[in-house]
Figure 1 (cartoon, rainbow, N blue to C red):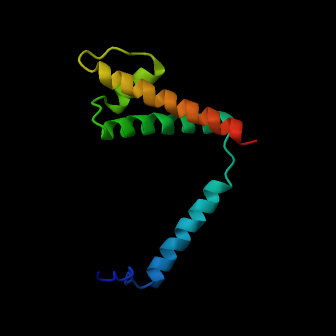
Figure 2: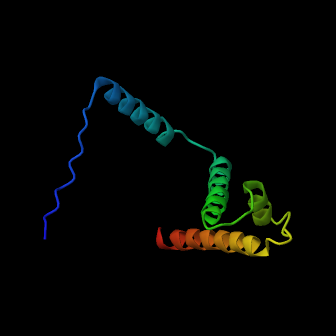
Length: 109
């Protein structure tokens, strides 16, 4: 059997790359030290979970749009004729995310 070579990428760290990395690190520090009110944090978390639900189920073939998935999650519209499986999938995924959050809250003091 032939021995595989270790992966050895070829790249050069230039001043432009260094400046770019420093800008990213500075932006990260600003975000980490910005105080957000609890209501804003909760809304950001909810929006991220909605997007995660939509795009994760979309990868699996779900035909609901982001707005339709959000309507299903919020309960404002739960009937999409011919797409009952898609509605169930969004609901199940959403409930799984909520359950994971619940388990994480219990396991982390």
